[in-house]
Image (tube, rainbow, N blue to C red):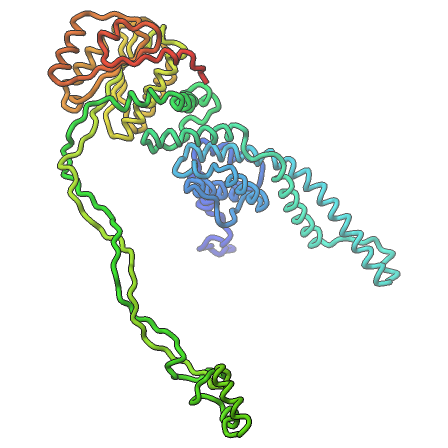
Length: 518
């Protein structure tokens, strides 16, 4: 019987199952939204493509472009892509914002796919052109060598030459294809314009909010972002409105410790300084030849003139004119000088024993149907400015939106993401319904009883077309007498008899009715 040897070890080239997993481990680092696009993308091989997208996503989240070359896409495409991202200013909005980065990568992958179609066409054209040029050059070289037999043979390119020409055509085709068209669709330009304007508004509102949220094109058309930008422009035309808001809230003494003012004052001080001064009167070293009247330092030829009976007169004349050739000597001496120096001295002075700050603000805003149009625009601008003032002065801000009886919506506006969402929802709403001012004012008076709202003032914004019971007016008067409550009013319209009895002062802005909505 024939015995076969027993194989005790696996062949070295046996495929391990773990190798299959290693090839796709980077797919786990891709977000779900990008996974189908990256896997089915027609440009390049899967592994370098996934690795390139993962590395690019990581650097974009830092607000940067990669410093080193990525494994994908082609180097020429990378250079054009990164230059486009930097020139358009989109990188600053990518920092720590996965939603913006993932949406950006999705559009970049789509643009790269479109450019690859043109790249393949250009590659075929350029490769044929480069091969034809290489064959012509090879034929000319053979003719120049005057080899009759070689000249009669048809020139043929080697495999290495063909590979080199293909690489050259590949690089040049990507350079040309990358320069054609744009990398980002037009919606990104719209986003960048809005984001830059919103950043200025967020600074006024004291908010540090990442921009992005819903990046669909319809978001900018249907939500309140554009309203915020438009209302900010309206506010710039209404300085009276800003003045009214800044007077709301009674002054109160804070519990902060006494303020110590540190002031830098200028003071002149006189200092004595010693400095080295170079002078010829301190003979420390010889530095050359000069003309002088010094007998001790004159040259020998000048002394020879002095001994001559006739030239002696010339010597005296030269000495009188300080024209004797002499050794030039020089030295340094210490000179004491006085200088006045302007110094900044820190001086501490006692400030006020207690600081004062304004209290919170409560706004009762009419959202009835009669407020539609320009009054609605002014009302929304008022709420935006109220939040801006509250954020800059660290004051509370509470808004009651009222319509018909029982229709009261409360908004506590704070400079945070939740406050921003509530503000956006308010800016998107449409006004309609009746007018019942009793409900929101009763709620506002109840809130004034709370300790943190004790020093709040109330601002009523309406067109004045409402009525209220006498009990409400009596309660307001009692609160004014006991706690110094101030109820101010902004009348947007022609009416206002009801508001005049309730509000003191009442600000009339009838001229705003002619303000064109922008």
